[in-house]
Image 1 (cartoon, rainbow, N blue to C red):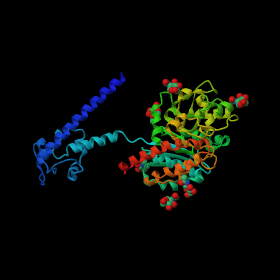
Image 2: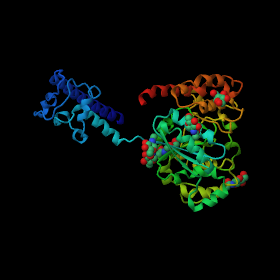
Image 3: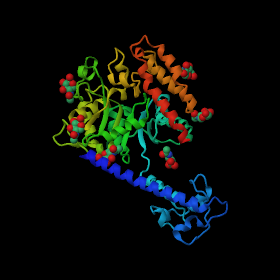
Length: 440
Ligand SMILES: *[C@@H]1O[C@H](CO)[C@@H](O)[C@H](O)[C@H]1NC(C)=O
Ligand SMILES: *[C@@H]1O[C@H](CO)[C@@H](O)[C@H](O)[C@H]1NC(C)=O
Ligand SMILES: *[C@@H]1O[C@H](CO)[C@@H](O)[C@H](O)[C@H]1NC(C)=O
Ligand SMILES: *[C@@H]1O[C@H](CO)[C@@H](O)[C@H](O)[C@H]1NC(C)=O
Ligand SMILES: *[C@@H]1O[C@H](CO)[C@@H](O)[C@H](O)[C@H]1NC(C)=O
Ligand SMILES: *[C@@H]1O[C@H](CO)[C@@H](O)[C@H](O)[C@H]1NC(C)=O
């Protein structure tokens, strides 16, 4: 039923557009006829409608606004031509071209470009890694990005210097924040837990104005536009508030199912390195839990949770998220492993089937593999992106040397399937190249 309704709506829209097009053609041909090809100002151009020849109108052989700069001179007062059909315009207003332009402007006004919000928490020696992650987000993304960077104070100066150097790109904005906790029990959190690890749990409470957010660890690399994971937000059903990937595909090597001393989501738990959140919903939801019989809001659940489980958790905030979604499984959207591809997916043989088929979308070099020699395939991708600049040529020429580098890693299990490391990346580079002339 809904499908038929869509078809009908589409048909009506098409009909309307062809009608508009027919009128515009009629108008242009009439103008051309009236203009007669003369070089002199033509009063007749628009007067066939208004009947008075008010104002000298230049417009011989009007073909489009670009062909005749004079035409745009007439489009001074857009309020006059908004939505007015051509034949109802006074003669000193520009007519059809202006009408189109006004319509175009109007549609831009009612649909402001949505920004994608990306948050990261950087502590210690993570500056270079974080900058590489941000670079990979900027290179491939289409919609503008808003970065929320939480960092230790001594890193702020370096972040600012590096990011301001990229400001010529104009496709992103950033805000730097200190590591902070909601004031009520800030001291307690700092005392109880590593401050940097628990920071991200508080993002829905700190970034109160932000509707939705993609949180990523610093060791993430985007191999396709952020737009693509962002679009999963629209796929949430009415109860889902956040999205993550499973911690493991293969239960025999899973961590939670073998070692955890606390509840966790699903068969093998979830990994929080790439976490998409609708924070509006997180702030509104009342969570089921095993501490009280009443449901608790996000701001109230974290502290009791930590107090109850602090002796039993190993991976910090990720464990707390697993406990929350164990009790509220209907609220989690689970996306496939190619959106959060880690060494676990190939270290003892490949077990992420989606990545084998479509390539890796987001690479997650946890366990420090970008910086040691244990998993050279991960390291090669990291170095290629770290070395690359924003010039088109530079980005296109990143693939060949990377492929050569990856071919040297085939002695490892991850290197054996090195093609999945560049499959999506090559496509993203092609797409970016196809896009860039229009944007310039
Ligand atoms: C900014 O870029 C210029 C030229 O690419 C470079 O010389 C300079 O060191 C950069 N500054 C920072 C803070 O990275
Ligand atoms: C970044 O912020 C500045 C000033 O607030 C604004 O003019 C600019 O359009 C923003 N850029 C993006 C990509 O949102
Ligand atoms: C997040 O959820 C709220 C409330 O359901 C909704 O209004 C908003 O559109 C959602 N955001 C996105 C990006 O889907
Ligand atoms: C913590 O782990 C111990 C040992 O496995 C277990 O007995 C205890 O119930 C756990 N605590 C909680 C709060 O689950
Ligand atoms: C939303 O999806 C989750 C996970 O598939 C499911 O558990 C939940 O029941 C769904 N909610 C609704 C309202 O269908
Ligand atoms: C990246 O640059 C470093 C130093 O500038 C160089 O040693 C390394 O080979 C380069 N790596 C790649 C993959 O281009």
